[in-house]
Length: 276
Image 1 (cartoon, rainbow, N blue to C red):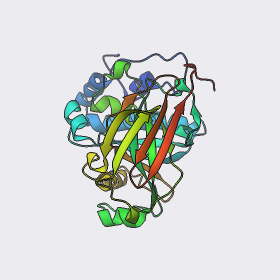
Image 2 (spheres, helix red, strand yellow):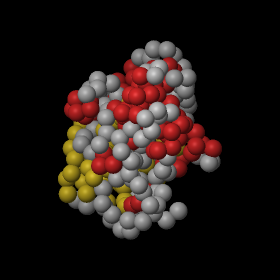
Image 3 (cartoon, rainbow, N blue to C red):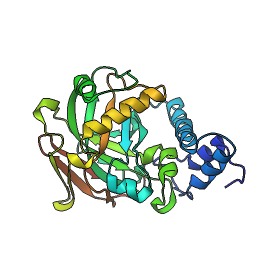
């Protein structure tokens, strides 16, 4: 990459809409972001600005923001990347697939799946500092979800700056269809099992997500106010993985069952080519 990188230049290097063919993975961008920060600014803030440049491109093309995803909620993954904080990405309407709807396999670069709890926000969250009670009072209901993460970085060779710049490695998401009130759930102890065509591939529980998915939601609500984009009524919030993510192959079918929330399925086409 250019020895004098710019925000736009780094964003351009990452700009490959999911589903674009052929897909050309790019080297990690963390060194370029660090080099940019040495000339002024904070590296992590630069990474979020790069993320926003490419989100704006998708909005300009007709996309619509429908929510946010929280990443790096697992203490194990945080330790692997050498960080102690989550990150966030933007969810667009173009990323949403229905429960059991066939997903073109090539729609996301280097796809992996993880099971999560999704919160549907009913009331705006505008405060500088939120509480658990604020999140509970502002949440209409929860749904089971499968997030299909993807990376434009070759071989998933990512650190914090790489994934933030790449929209927190967001790809697609699938929501279940049976809404459940938070009062009917044990968000900490709820168990999760994800299977690939009947074979167990990932297990976990609500406690794997920062100890409680609501902790992750509080972090996100505060962060979105700090960046000037508060969570609003109608937003979907993917609170973070409940268990290990699993690589996806063409033709895979995944089902995730979360105690108290039911099941959601992600079905991938057998063709490895994306048809727009």
